[in-house]
Length: 103
Image (cartoon, rainbow, N blue to C red; front, top):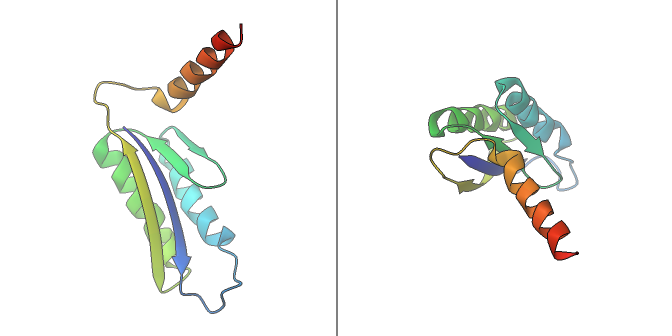
């Protein structure tokens, strides 16, 4: 399965506070998990089976909770049993299709 998630603290001392340190703590948890992952400006996507992916997301959420009294978590999952390598495979198929349609 692939799960794209975004986790950040809310309710901090100031509305102008940046969340990058909290997000960095979450991304560190994901990277240390050893599971395939990708982070962009909006989400971190992680690939693995249900139990291992959600265990990592829980640890990442716990890491963010240290930065504020409230945590916001957004999830989107692609559950496709029996498929691996989809973190890059989906993008490779998309790019191939774009290249083929340009010919």
